[in-house]
Length: 189
Image 1: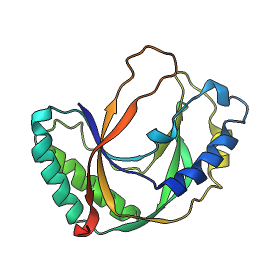
Image 2 (image 1 turned 90 degrees about the vertical axis):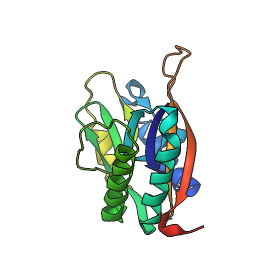
Image 3 (image 1 turned 90 degrees about the horizontal axis):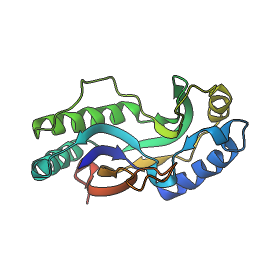
Image 4 (image 1 turned 135 degrees about the vertical axis):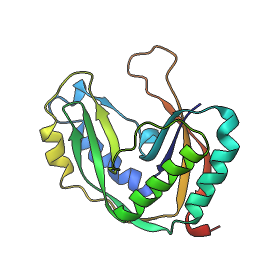
């Protein structure tokens, strides 16, 4: 199964972001981008890729410990940027040091559980909004994102999410996401 650890924005913040995305989709060239749907809006903490189901119990236990050792922290969707000329994302503000810490802990938990992780990279909090198969000028979209600031919320859970890749062959179909496990931060119930 294809897994990643994530922070999920609450519904109200998703509503705010949806209004912005509606504006972005009205910009020239927006129809040439593949927009992620609301179910796909998340901040990936540690991408694990294909994980053997036999590792899931140990991985879950280790992620629970990582969550327990991390205190809740404030966050908001804020600004945005691009990766090259093919990916558009919304950024984050608030407890970014705490977010980096939980990302490192989730990565370490996966490694210790026997998940073969890619090389370690410096964590950059981002929520992917759109992608393109070819280079595009994403600067007008980034300019609109720069003014965006969602309501603040308290991150209180670490989520393990399964990504089910599309199998229908329908153009534009994206992955489906399903939460496999969630653990309270700081030992909260």
